Image (cartoon, rainbow, N blue to C red; front, side):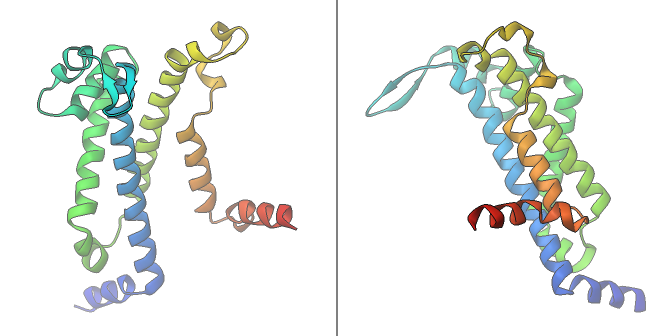
Length: 198
């Protein structure tokens, strides 16, 4: 009983509570943002015109070549589309399924996590890293295989994946720096902005 009470006391520590709530919210938000990315990219690929009243008009090919891959779930269908182009593999799809279950746990069991279990930091870190890794992998493939054709770049054929820094990669670095226990690294952006504002 003493151990249980100590656990409750720890979880009700305002700093611990805020940290667990913030980290849970960050994962849920970035997961949902990634879901939007997974759906929007192939959809934009098959969007060929814009109507001032109807907005973007998607080609019928979007239904036959993407949504038909899983008629019940556009996220799964879009993942399979990416897989068909070797942007991701079966292991990545399995990883996404794990991340989706973890997102659902954070979302639906948040009171239990905040007041009873606490946030298991190792599991959280592993899942967050996997989420960012999957997103960055897809972004780099998209830039290298789709967007690069519309960019004014010399010798685009010489550009390799290692040369590309995606938006997700930038956000990941920022996020990791801000959460760093190294105060110099954590406060780097704040300090630099203050210097430039003077």
